[in-house]
Length: 458
Image (spheres, rainbow, N blue to C red):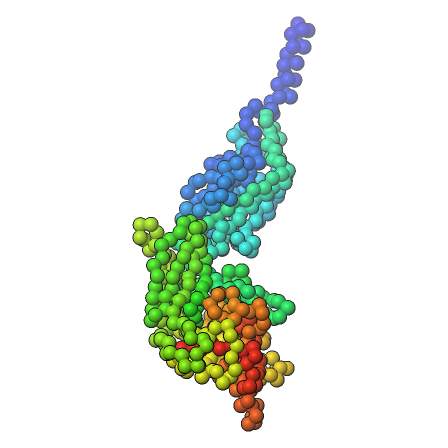
């Protein structure tokens, strides 16, 4: 009898000690009611697209081939992850509490605690921060979505096993929006296009000019192509179209208007295409009696169309040329030689044809000229559309278009504007413009030791 009582007591004690121990499943995080079970570090850093496609660090090859969002107009708010849409960093303990309750336990345990934290970062390809609900731009893709976590654990009071642990880690997903391809930038020579240099401020407004990529496309509407770069041109000048959303080269047919041709050459990746302008050009540089050169009727609109291998239209870019320039080569000429422009059927340039620079108040040598608009903020050009040949194209010597080599000097160009200070002596001085910096200076009519000549269409 004693032995039986001892055995019964032992059984009761064992039952009492183990009644709260449940043999089953470890707890897990979930943000979609159990559809996604986060049980390890790999799944902790996972994402789910709106179509149900899941990615984790072990299946992430987006560095090679960026992930494309499934639907037009989607943002990062349409990507499910453990980081709630109203924050970018959260303690895991907050995830298992109200209002989130991002946890589950197949055995019904609700006495749950969590340690560690989870952080989200989203930047565009220029490393600029992007909000979860921001409208996405293919020109700023691929975007980088980075998830990182510290060491942590998810634990219930009862059950066996009653815990999942997570090691500190991080992963980056490269993501593209689902958007039709487009031309992001028209990129001429970028030299002297940065915000601040030891010479001055050359960058145009951020809505117009990107110092790393050139002119931002202003219009995709054929009725307003005149808002785009370029509005000026000369034989041999070229620029690159930087394209977003295209993975292979497109076919581009040459476009000709009024004797001016735009010829396209795509690069092997398809992400850019070089556009070269050819047209009326002077060859009789040394002649004092040159033949007339064709003067195109301007403005003329150019629409460049990229097509795929099936000849389907994929992308378009348009611009409107309003002025065509013809230069007299790299040699210097005296003021008396500016009549050469009239002989070829063109006119000598004014300051506003070349630059949008203003004259600093402390510089008497440039007071009174009229520059192009939109005006620069200082004595040098600022890169802008429709603001003169040099302000649009930058330092001219880089193009191999018979403009003088900027590296050997400032390379001044004659204008038809005289100093206007209110006395007869002024007419002996004319404004000249630097093809390197776009600033304005004076030289006497007898000068010409370092002054070049460029003419512009009527």
